[in-house]
Amino acid sequence: MPDAPEKQAIISGIGISRVGRKTDISHLDLTTESATAAIADAGLRPEDIDGIATMGDTPPEEVEQHVGGRVGSVAMVGTGGLLAPVMGAFLAVANGDARHVLVYRTVKMMGGSILPPSGGDAPAPPRPRPSARRAGGGGEGAEGMVNVMGDMAPLLTYGAYSAANWLAMHAQRHMYLYGTTKEQFGALAVNSRRNAAFNERAVYREPMTMDDYLGARPVSDPFGLLDCDVPIDGSIAIVVSSAQYGADCPNPPVRVESMGGSRGQGGWDQRPDYPKMASIDAAADLWSKTDLTPADVDIAELYDGFTFLTFAWLEALGFCGTGESGPFVERGTRIALGGDLPLNTYGGQLSAGRMHGYWVLHEACLQLRGEAGERQVEGAEVAAVSVGGGPIAGCLLLTR
Amino acid sequence: MSSTEPSAKPPMPVPDELTQFFWDGVARHELCIQRCQTCGHYIHYPKTICRFCQSRDLAGERVSGKATLYSWTIATQPFHPFWVDKIPYTLATVELVEQPRLMFMSQVIDCPEEELEGGLPLEVAFVEMSSELTLPLFRPARG
Image (cartoon, rainbow over all chains, first blue to last red):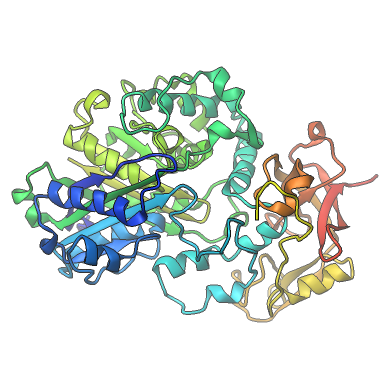
């Protein structure tokens, strides 16, 4: 198998800001904290950074002015979803367009927007402009993200305002087809909370029981409050470097085995294989570029904006068969820190907080570096990371 | 705008060249779905090109309004002021009988929660949500 270009990239540094709910810390301050930490962790100075990439708040130009480095030229990968800037950084260093790329994601509670600001705190009004999806065809980045969501407009018209609604319908279909139970979703949430207890940055660390889970306020049946991730303020940054830098890296370099992405056809509700999602296509893309198999994966950090999304990723990535994610996580032993496939070891977005896919990446790096403290999975050498749901999905296979 | 105060203003669709036929149909209380005039496949949401045969000869056609329940969720938290005094309501993905996997996002009305189940036969009903907005919703088919 010819080497995929992303194998020429390493993650040389990681950084995380203060994290919390309603912190009153500005986007820029959060970003500065994570970015400076990541650059130092990589053993670099800001002037070594010759590419900056992100998606959402705090534009790269602001980071260039306040932290340093050069924005440079990093093209977003059109199929990467929220991992598009990370994947773009991999390719930029592989192409020689940059040597060290700073990638970050900063979110503020309901912010971290990938959509244009709507004004006020009400959701943006529906804009059924399917033609806009084709405007500027091939345009990527934030604009591309808006475009791919064009089919959302009819959902909004019907009062399906939240991803909680859209994904609850996927979860319900999964329950109908495969007998998946609410308690099985709960096993995932409880496992994540147990892991969060070992993560001093996690926002929810107190023990959660299955009764707590089942008794939570309903949001969009079958989802209750504890099926939904926790909005937080925070920022996570990584430095992506060309593999040659690995020898000079002060910390163990994290290697990139392969990446996969999809902006699947069918939007939120028109896939012929519903309730499968773009994660299926992204995972197939990932495995097509490596000789490793799901059995080689030591830890899985899989997106959990909602419990069901992790179930979808477990199946998409081949850790279990179609429809088998419920039994897979049942009782929580297999996915516990000491289990066959430790899952969302830092507490996940459900308990640690919503970093829109960047905390899973940060945690995978920590684990592969052997620096995850009390929650360290001994001998973790291969990590799967996944981000997204519905029509957008990206995933990575990282190694020590 | 506080998210806890009911608002009479619904989120309004803004028809464009691709969706005008749909809203014109709704005004006549007809459910219309885009159909490829070359290969006969229905296409939803409306597009400019048929994903089955790449024809650009597409037109809105009235469908029967018959469907089965594919999936659903009972929304108990409003995410927009218009829906505050309308929760709980049942959001649904329904499969129109005209074509397998021709899914239509809507709501199910007049159906107790315990009767919601996959495959439930449904029929379209045009419901005035406000003086400005009528939507095609679905209810259990009669007879």
